[in-house]
Image 1 (cartoon, rainbow, N blue to C red):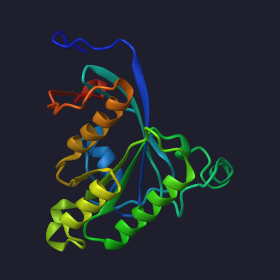
Image 2: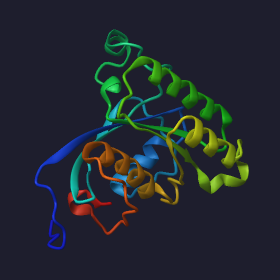
Image 3: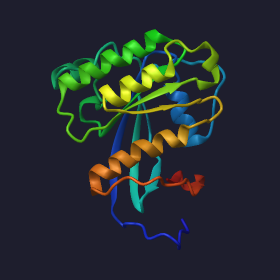
Length: 211
């Protein structure tokens, strides 16, 4: 990876991102757009956990991501025993950060992530564990359920979470969403103020993004 104009830390941080949401909201499509720049028109439900491992560089720091694409889970495991019994191998309770995806045309899918967030907060220590809320299917904004301002105010002001709307179908705001999340992770790891970093390049041969 030729990046002579950058000084990149030789050490890298491993970051586990758990992507959760109701069925059909586009969790897998978001991940595949980010990692592979691909979108499938046909909906195929996620039946088992899939893991994607791209690398990203932000603020000259290298991160190895482990993005966990989870099937629908009826609840967040309240303790390690429940996780082992019902969600073995998912690693939900020790994720570095959570991406909660909902469909902006479905109020029900938002209520699902609202409940899930409450369960996460009640079930584990969330100190320095970011939660990012993502409203997918912006290309269907005319069919929106809840007003965007209402959702954004709730998520940003009351939940204190990051919020981005995107379209996996048109690859709109996908990189922005991961950039904003990784800025929060980078701030936690290194303690400097997040900056508005511009996407400089996508070195897809190495599956590495400079954010």
